[in-house]
Image (cartoon, rainbow, N blue to C red; front, side, top):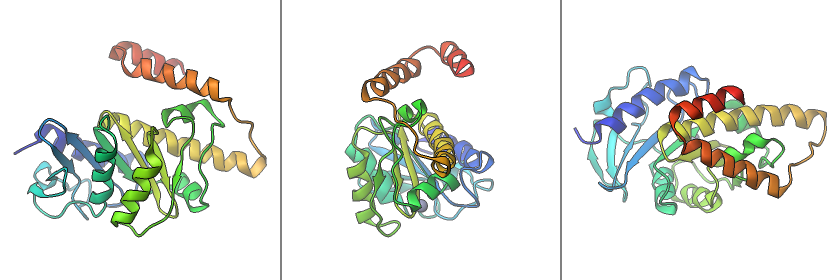
Length: 225
Ligand SMILES: [Zn+2]
């Protein structure tokens, strides 16, 4: 079986999508790339995350041709592939309909730098215009909005995040969901002040250093923050 590690990761993080409340039932989808092989492992369409076996995870080429796996790849395959083609540093993609991110996306809003954790995405969380789910148009819209960010809200649909690993992309999805919830609360009370550009640049640089420091140090940092 090819891409066994990536398949196992998709099964593991698929369950986490449900247990962490980022999705319900079979909603949302995940993929991991193997850049050297030119292949992508992606969650299959319509399979319960708790029943999913590594053999059911679909493996496709970056052009979208199926190589291995029972069943069909997620209907958002064009979206995942567009993001891998758009940025060489993207190794994993997570797509969810998590409640608060979808609430913000359904208003057609982006999330500005109202909180330092927005730095996990970049200087903001941008929004991509609506297009039908699974369409090439939606893939194009999101790829265009991605630029240097790690998260994009999808108008009237949900959220997509990218990372250098599935764990990284998953963490960004969890943080954007948290930020979306706080942003919804804040907006019911008033207009939040925004952090200046140079402060966000400093925060983004610090997050980069944490990501590339040894695991023990990263854990310590997380606990303190
Ligand atoms: Zn979706």
